[in-house]
Image 1: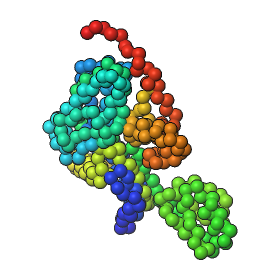
Image 2: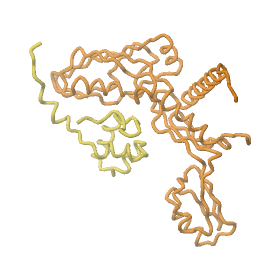
Image 3: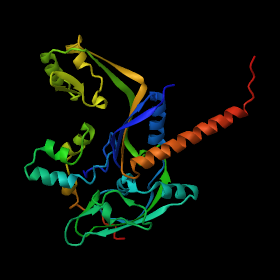
Image 4: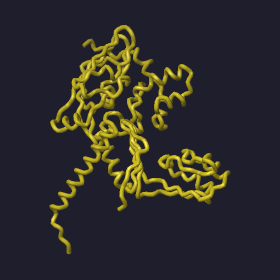
Length: 266
Length: 69
């Protein structure tokens, strides 16, 4: 196996995009699946409603509360998971003389490390005289059980597009290539065609269809592109880190189980 | 009804973007630019705001049955 390397294309707390050179798609895909289904986060699971005069029924209100992403650090999630712990949040709002929108900022968390990602998420709307009073228990969980615990929105693992350009490309073809690509992969500079960003290419094949003599495209599955976006509960770094830990512990478990089996080779 | 908390398809948070979106639309900004400014790239998230009808404003005035506690 060739030496793997990672080239970061885009990286911040919300978005991660990187080219994993010489890392097969199968490996990045297992990482992606662990991120989606098995990296734990915290979400509201139990809602005790003391009072709900609003138009939204108790069940739809509880559903909306559950979907609110709660910002945490992975340490808090691990701590809660080990001890079967939960974080209590309170909601107590009343509309007195005017209509009032209930925002996620109205939620009061008992734990400082846990709170809604944004303070402006609309939970409900109340007419004058209506009130909502509820207590919520936010528990750690994984995306396999319910999507509200999944820390990523989109997560994509795919092969790296392979674009082979002819050595000499006429001026008009170069111009046509830049124009025809819907994802702006190419750039013409001084009569030469350059690939700006290979990760933009979706292998749609429009360029090959039109200028088949000059461009050949394909997919290299020996290298991969990993792209994912965080919902906001955890940072991309924490998600990736935890996904690696979980994947490695699963492999360890598999190895141990495998070693226990007495192989009977005929 | 009220704006969903998350995008149905990808799960991105959109519940906090509706008010900003409507103020932008009322100010005469093109919906395309408004959605771009809100950072909604995918069409799944864009249709959530674009096709939403905030019907709850008409309903909340009608209270439910008062059981008199």
